Image 1 (cartoon, one colour):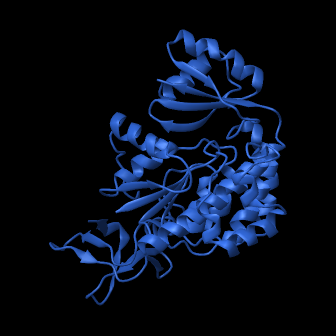
Image 2 (image 1 turned 135 degrees about the vertical axis):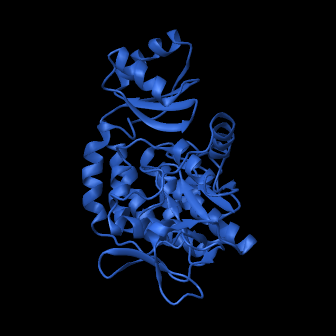
Length: 354
């Protein structure tokens, strides 16, 4: 099995997409029409030094990621089993899964980038050699309660986010603790409480969009679990102020089988993080469905994670069975699924993926 990964802000580089725009002239022209400028010109030449400005960075990465994914599918003729994206890259994952069109995804990303660029001035820093728990404890112990953890990138790479002076002053406590502290070249305190205004405005903008049924499971940055169809818009808004649970997302995928991971777009930042995660931490143990889950939650989770035709074990049957349908709510109160070769539905509580 294979997971395709889409990088986010920070991966941009002048010249990205050099060999890809000419392969998809129609989509490139659509992007130009939506954005009001030449996306190819910014990516390849960046004459006005705009590529590193958030309102331009995000659309540029989205387009390069999307075209790279299409090129990969053309080459292989096969789609991935899962998709996941880091922050901005999550929009590419949703587009690759069929949840949004290329055009709608670009419109969302354009507005997201603009709103995030208008947020109060802030800063971010990477802490190397510390776990998320250690970072949080150091911040709390030292009185830096106004700093949030933005990214859990790997078990030993954490990014924090806050007001510029706080991020500068926090350097000392981490250096004294023997941790490497790198202030990042960002214009805002992304994925923190300071993006609340951007989140509220983006929620309103999201109301003008609808999302199609996901054809490939997409792992959410917010929950580190497969997207639930009914919660796509809410997750996209929440992601702006919420920590990116990259480590936990990858650990979840590692529990789903023997996966290969391939990075789309530009760079290999996510590929390196996969290596660190595999080397430093065991896969996450996934809890089974709980009795206190609602019937709808059980159905949504199953359908977002397991395709029709999945091999399963069922209580009372020695051999594996194969699903024939998606899970449904039966008789208004029972989460159930139909199996091949059996004239009837099986309760999801009695079904376990093989």
